[in-house]
Length: 112
Length: 118
Image 1: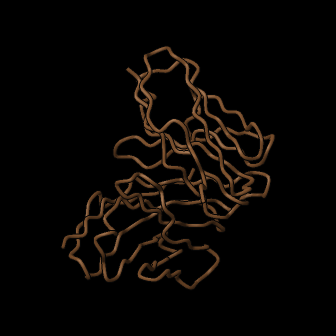
Image 2: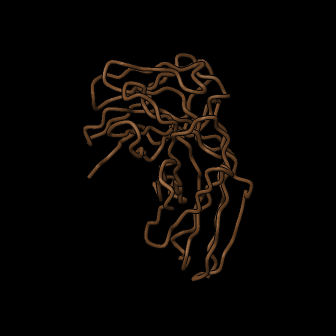
Image 3: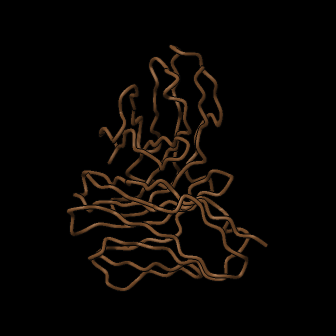
């Protein structure tokens, strides 16, 4: 019963490097989301995909790009990593609108 | 834009006692959803309870219940018979009711760290 799977769990990057965070869900959900969580703060939405083939910006999209590869997979890319992007990143999915979101275990990303 | 405020950064409670976590929100929407999520040290985000704004009855889920005051824009979480496993960061979250093609986006509060003491 995997749910939402994120890879990798931990990553250290140097400033300027690029990186793609992977997310896959096996619940046949339509909507998927990427959040970041910084110390002392709640989660903030980066990008989301309401359904396969669509993506939209969330609250903090600058410096990120996303791809909804198929219904199962939603990736987050950092083209040129910056120290301000050091955070814990969560992927989530929901069956349809108004249904609770199911979260992955998070990716801890440090940028030096 | 919606905002969610949790005014208690930290709380503690003795095992088996009852504790209430506060949450207020600001919105001009009439139809929306409210959630409490729990994040234990394992970092996983776990849904605790959900409330639809159009329902007057407060949601309950075993030892967890809410006090939803729509006019006051207040949504508190009550944990009864606290257990050591309830130790976690608790987040209040708000979701607007939007069209089916628009996705459902959560706005989170800052969180309340709850510690249950033996």
